[in-house]
Amino acid sequence: MAANTTPGNALGVHAGVWVGDWADDSARFAIESSAAIGYDFIEIPAVDPREIDLAHTVRLLESSGLGAVVSLALDADSDINTEDAALSARGEALLNSAVDFAGAIGADYVGGVTYSAMIKYDHPATAASRDNSLAVLGRVADRARAQSIRIGIEYVNRYESNLLNTAAQTARFIRELGADNVLLHLDTFHANSEELSLPAAVRDAGSLLGYIHASESHRGLLGTGVLDFPALFGELAATGYAGPITFESFSSAVLPRSTSNTIGLWRESWADPYVAAREAHAFLREQLAAS
Amino acid sequence: MTANKLGVHALVFAGGTSPTEVDYIIDETKKAGYDLVEFSLHDSPQLDVPAARASLEAAGLGVVASRGLSFTADVSSDDAETVARGAALLHESLAITEGLGGTHFTGALYSALGKYMQPLSTAGRANVVSVLQDLAKEAAGKGMTLGLEICNRYETNVINTAADALRLADDIGEDNVLIHLDSYHMNIEEDDFVRPVLLVGDRLGYVHIGENHRGYLGSGHLDFASFFHALADISYTGPITFESFSSAVVSPTLSNDLSIWRNLWNDGPALAKHAREYMVNAIDGASRVYR
Image 1 (cartoon, helix red, strand yellow):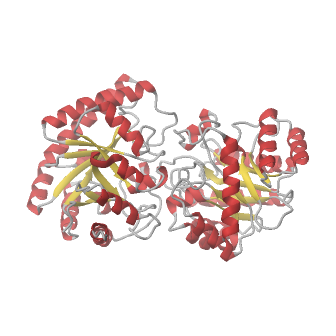
Image 2 (cartoon, helix red, strand yellow):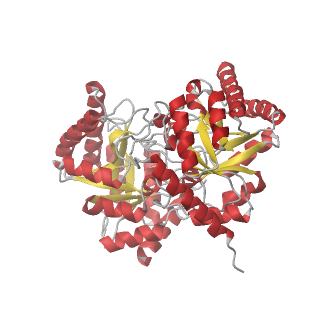
């Protein structure tokens, strides 16, 4: 997020608002549109560095003045929340690849469902699978530190992981991990299902809170669902949170069918990404100004 | 006394429906002051239906039965044999409901209770309509009603909102098919807790009250005041049932299907008593209109 030069929280937008892949044209559209609206940075889902033109992304970011962060979610074939060594090794390789992708495009943050597959598990997590996740993330954090990259642990709802569903669980996990470049990533959509309240989640995260996804209760336009954003921003102001805040919203109008299937998106939330991203930017600025 | 009969889901007390568990469930439901108990039929092979009915009658308790289907017995499938297995399960479950002395059979009667990996197909939806038309006709002959419980995106791809459910009920076109709202699912999918109630109006047949994390009522952030006010505004007099899940009470099947990974309480009877008082107060408060 090096491009952010104004004081206060840097505001970002998830690339999934704009595009369903990272081909050259998609990257151009997502980056130039984000910059045009006034976002400080864009969150780019990790892609295999061998499959895209990295220099193209770097040039676009430089010419638009936009910062970048990288996100990823492990899946059933690359899961470190497991007792299966081969499966864990594939998960670790995917995490390492995401760190290297971030390094290559000048991003200083890799966050998401980095500790578990993003799937509907059919069993509870075990002590051994949790220990394995901690061990792998320790090594990944070392690799990231060498490139001045931080790792984000985004807890998600019960349907997307069996390991970390609350800020309190995540804070305990990060403290056990003991790596100084690992931070807690709070997503308001997931917190809505699992937490006592958004302010309580911020307090549970405490000083480990380092990244926020602002996402409505149904993942549509901000302000159209049940989330109490004034209470969230009040708590963030009271605790002095100065980190990034990223708008995340998904619509079947943009996402490829495979991604929609993974996240259970059966509805078209909105049709025009430009309207969604512009309204969200204004909404977030108003919330920050009012708190 | 409220106009609404108040119920409690059996999984507050026990994970299965063996004779010992059924006796305990009925005993604790009565002690906590409820009018009815809801049995999930996921464990129906263990259920001694005549014995349960005798115990319910002896205790003076009403009964509602609920269930979701499975991916191998799913009436929303494109596959004729899978649909047939789902239809058979529904007819069998309707007979069990009748055997228990219940008149209301509800739940995800229209699909598997699980995370789908593709959207509902046109043919699959037509199968839902056709099977539920038959089931509704059979139920009507017995003086029974069917409930369409609206579930969140991770538990079904068929109906996630009140608007979806009304369209499905319209297509089924039988008067004894009613809508079942659940506050836990509404928190994830609806715009608020008022509009869906007003939209459904007199077609509302059953209500689940659950907190956003499915624990103690009042310990989360759901806007129950708005929800109970809306129920009062449509003069809803049907049953209202408390639903809560914790890893302290484990069903070998349903707990994993519902992703119950966390311990939110240990003492089911204490939880049930608290929830009944909470609902009685909320209903009473909503009935007091000052003009």
